[in-house]
Length: 303
Ligand SMILES: C[S@@+](CC[C@H](N)C(=O)[O-])C[C@H]1O[C@@H](n2cnc3c(N)ncnc32)[C@H](O)[C@@H]1O
Image: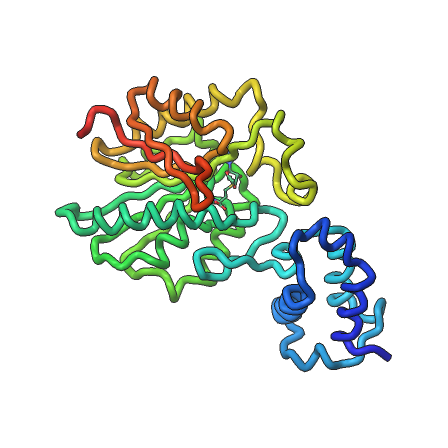
């Protein structure tokens, strides 16, 4: 009988083409670490399991992993874990898998937060719009080094996403800054009462930003498995959506506050003009591959 490790090697050889199509750049090494991660998150604790005999069809939890690969389910959903800004987040199909680009937004927002913490402010309010797994809100709370009390309000339209975000916050509670307080709300950011916590010094958001008409350029794995609510906006509503979003943002940002918004490379310039029409100062920031990625917004009546 094969060991689990041999079974995995053979599975990799047998399905190499399919695996490369679903998981570009996948290696046997990566697959082995995903399998061990899957084992740990399903209580099949130690690595010796790789050398134990394995027969397909006899172990439900391990079969789930191989069947998932055959279906092309994202590896993070299989292991129910994703690393973001160097910390583990529980993820499943209720939330978008946090992306590496978003770490740049966190970097920018953290710099602003630490600058604010050095001013005479008695307390700092942050809003995370479309929090999903809680990735951005938690990254800020995990990496905040200041002493000024910070309230991070996180809102999402999806009640399912919020369950997971709050679960992530509970799992990470001992690593969060003691000076940060997190609050979770369900709401549609276009209608929700943003003033629930007062005005914000910093607003962060990775909202849905892909137009339906751009779906063709999205990897089929993303289309099949990630929540479309997190990704897409109807073409005919796109500009109106951002107009409402930015006017709410403007009303709820303190006069010298700052907002970091992730957006689509193809539409960021349109969003920049929408923001400017609302009298917001809007600067485009690029990622490390020189692609337009973020809008940094300030109220036009300041500075
Ligand atoms: C691109 S995902 C970002 C998730 C997470 N912040 C991240 O960066 O990984 C967008 C999130 O916005 C939420 N969302 C979509 N429309 C919304 C709306 N109108 N109001 C509030 N949240 C919304 C989705 O449920 C989803 O969790």
